[in-house]
Length: 220
Ligand code: CTP
Ligand code: MG
Image: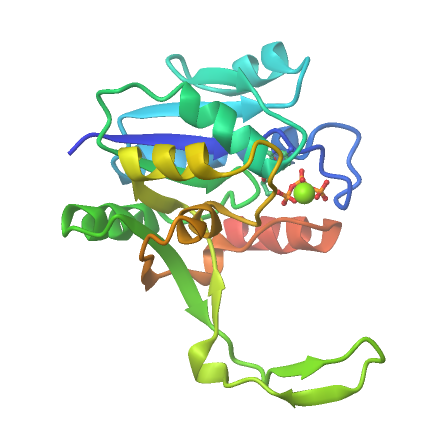
């Protein structure tokens, strides 16, 4: 089984508010996108495609190892992954889609996703339990009911797919559709999505505080 990785890195990082694209922001001296690519390679991925913000190819090439393929992303994450998927070679049987915004994902998570695919899953996502009490609220902010926490999971990346399954699901998706992640794309094509254990260290860097926490995590 040969695995390709797509790193979604074409966002601008509005909520982080840095003076450069979020994926190029350094964490312990290495750009976030470099951490994400290294995790995929360490976990057993054979080829990597990175989607970059338009006009940023040179800066990303300087941040990444030789052999990583760079493609222009689109206006939404869904569009960016679609562009990345078109650049994955036919020789890869499975594809892992990962966020540059999850720099400290341990390679073990990649290995668990690959193992589930090798075991026959067509789609698999890493998940974590929810520890807080969860409720639903209406537009007025009032609680409308309890949500059964045992049935809820937080979804992370990398998310793994048989390549043909993911390609077909993106083909069926309307051109400008925008979905939160790739599991949602295959789910919309009625593909069953399996789960494996995620990892708290794979937390997403969204706002400045998350970067502070990530720096602490690196220092151990
Ligand atoms: N992403 C992408 N293409 C886009 C938008 C997002 O490839 N058009 C990527 C981001 O680079 C990121 C991942 O999708 O690695 C998750 O998105 P998010 O955390 O929302 O990052 P940004 O969109 O960059 O941040 P913000 O929403 O704060 O602008
Ligand atoms: Mg975003």
